[in-house]
Image 1: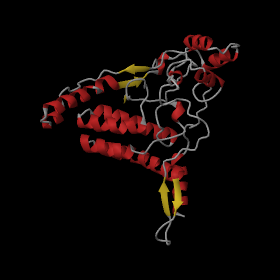
Image 2: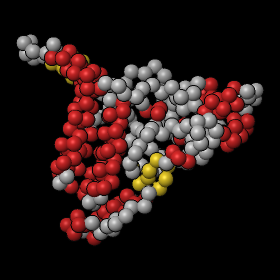
Image 3: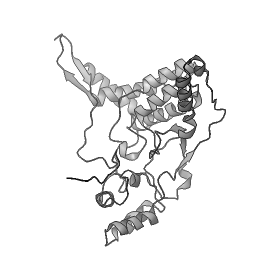
Image 4: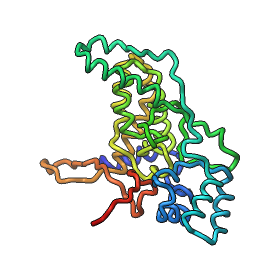
Length: 290
């Protein structure tokens, strides 16, 4: 009975929200993605789903439908003509008033560890980005989910941020006193909860069918503890509660309870999906077989 009440409350809290269906004909499923990936047109299988279109999506889909040759060369030319380079709609952000020698370094006595920590801290200034969809034409599309604030990416080939990666990044940002970036990252995640009812695995449309271990409440706790911004938790407590209800409603199962007088529930980290992920998490490599 308790779970049914929680589920009802969740429904009332969620209200209207954006669709969590990955229904893009370019980035989620369909003949185009299958042709590009099966032919290994690009060295990195993730790259194609991170490329924004140069033309309205309807025109790109129509042009692909008119192709009669699905060779690797033809598909590569098609991509070059219809898609920007990956990361086109993401801008590098310059950190203002960034402290190269944060206070926590004063408590590190070992010179080797101190030097290492300083170099790690400096990485934040190279990993901060902001979405800029104004670069896209009318009708053009990107796989990037709407993010209104600055964010930290894992680096390398990644142009989007991820849920639990953000938790570990925040640990370092808070330690280094980079609270404005911590706040921005949390605000992006809170916006996702408002929009979708939960935080997707990552900030791309092809991650909308799954989440990651829910660490958002812990992120807020750590940020408030480090920054003393107590007003922040008061402002966003309802959104955190919304995410909690999502996990209770969608990921809870009844389990045997030692005390038969009450019901016990387990919240599972599980994804219901019958299709392969459109974006490989590893690079496609040609390996020799013997």
